[in-house]
Length: 350
Image (cartoon, rainbow, N blue to C red; front, side, top):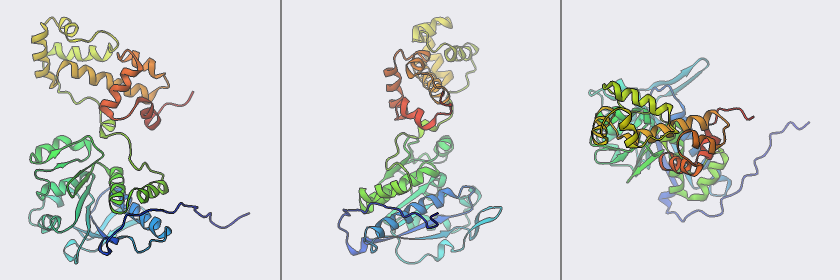
């Protein structure tokens, strides 16, 4: 019986772009605070650690990342029974030049404490580093410091309305997994921070290095899809008009039937023009858009929860053909129904 650990027979990187001496080691500083999800910090840190391994394994140990952590509140940042993660270096003790500054989320009471020196420090540092990034709702940190004013950014899909209300000067794009605007990166969620970090590695040391890192961690180098595939059910307004509320239920229950504008208007006894106006006012979207979202939402549920053929799902949801459903998935979710099922299916194989 063999008692030694197996050796990774990992491919070496054959080509790394030419770099100036000042670009060979990049100092990356994570800003961490107490947070219930350590993946938002540990995930991206481990991606950089694997990048160092890939570079060293390829005979290029002079390249890589020097990683450290500072915190807005020194002390325990994560704790469960038997494990504590402690960050003990306060942000104001950070000295020297920094290449990349990455923010993990922090608790809101700390973030909105105007008596603290943290937000002015964030604003100042954002002008001194080569690039800055946030993971999940750490986007609020840069927004609160004014760094994102006039920029495009993303954050977790569930925070869309709150974020837009707080920061109207930020162009929030809730669809991408991560967004780059100049030297500012924002990632949508905990695992999206890993996707973003892979993109930083590709930017620094080339596609082959990033690909080897992705392979080592069994990840997509470029994850297909967008945040829309993780959203909750329809975000339509609740109508006050009883006939419109009843019609919404009817649409959900009769997706395979004729749901064109004239048919829906006749169902509630209105002219098409008046119906369009009333529906949009009550629901916050056009009738056609509502029907489209209903069909997509129910189709997603069928694809996730059943083993029904895609052609059958398409017919049940009113697409007519599997190609019609495929186009809808690709247009709205940036992924095909087949790929969506492979990724999210909860049905047992029959």
